[in-house]
View 1 (cartoon, rainbow, N blue to C red):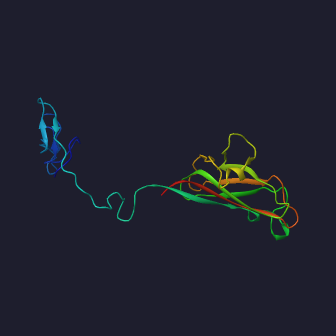
View 2 (cartoon, rainbow, N blue to C red; view 1 turned 135 degrees about the vertical axis):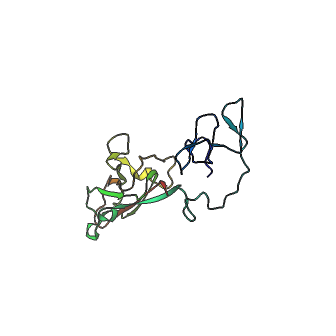
View 3 (cartoon, rainbow, N blue to C red; view 1 turned 90 degrees about the vertical axis):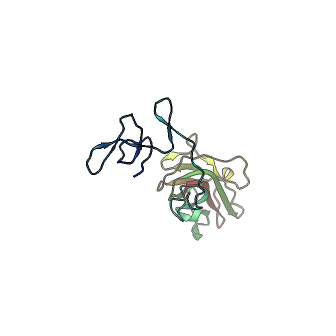
Length: 208
């Protein structure tokens, strides 16, 4: 039974190093057996054998990098993650239509199913009516960790604008099941039937 060089304790017929005291064991008798010399091994200066050049390259099948056929190895994706409003549908104003009243903070949240590291926020607002002039501000969290340099509201609308330049971010990685949250409000609230509605999407890296 062939073994591998540099591993101690092979059965009879295993490869080893003569003269080094490293032996296999005969499974029938339990007696030590002098190992055979690996066919690619040569002696150098009477010491340990030195292996020759490796054999020819073998071209493996296309599925070999996978864990099994149809099951690829661990990789990384760059994907969007929706952050859903927990109340009022992400809308302020027009309270008779279900919007949030003035002064309300709406939490946008998501709980990724795989490790996720946010690198960008996309925030889009729909503003209807002459009094809908407020900007979205708030704070960002991964779990209980504030993802800002200081406590306080930041300009979420400018940070998450689709045409914003150089507004990439590097949030702490959220492990599966950890809440990602944006606590958001407005700088000015619409009145009457006017309203503002927002969507927030996180873009980041995850393992798949």
